[in-house]
Image 1: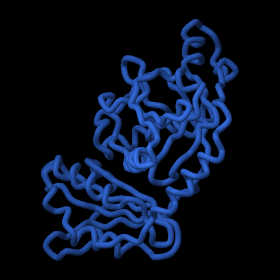
Image 2 (image 1 turned 90 degrees about the horizontal axis):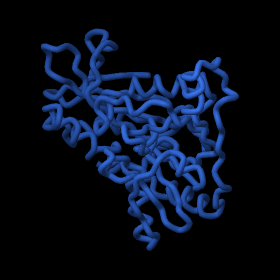
Image 3 (image 1 turned 180 degrees about the horizontal axis):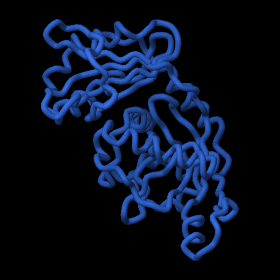
Length: 284
């Protein structure tokens, strides 16, 4: 992985003059690039610019900055670049950074943990500050339960989203998403899917529901890297937790696995194909 800091005065990226690994991540945004094509980059730009403005450096997120970002991304291969707002030290100005990262392997299905705890994020509506925390949750879910993703649940028991994904589900022919008032991170991929659904006259509804209410539906978890992934199976970590609270020995056999209904393969295929068609070369 390569990382550069933005020199606002000279309008170019530079190697960091010192180790910045201990910098505080204040905001971030990332997207998937395949052979020079990207989906909805303008939305990622807008989301990052908004976050940078919250951090007091919105004026530095210029067209020159984005042109330099695009120039650093190879025209071939699969990449998962990220832009950051960093606080290198408490007494220094916040800085923009760019990370060029190879894209990790992509998947089409997920095994998802329903955790026993509520959403632990400190800054749920801004991508960046909780990235390390969320990666820790996913690591624990993978090691303890063999799960790829973790649901985030509010204090009242309603599902907000996944640790790295936006939640969508189908109720027959209606495409559903969590009530915006639950405070999910504004997801770029989910937004373009919902807009396309409306354009196709697909009914769209925003609802509040608890994890167990998802078990009987076709559930999608979506993000910029993987596009649309179907939830193959839920693992209910609350059963594990309740058994341990009663004094039992921790044992994965106590977790209950709930598989969703068979996916509408034709519908899922059509949506995945459409999502691929909207990738374009970024125009500056």
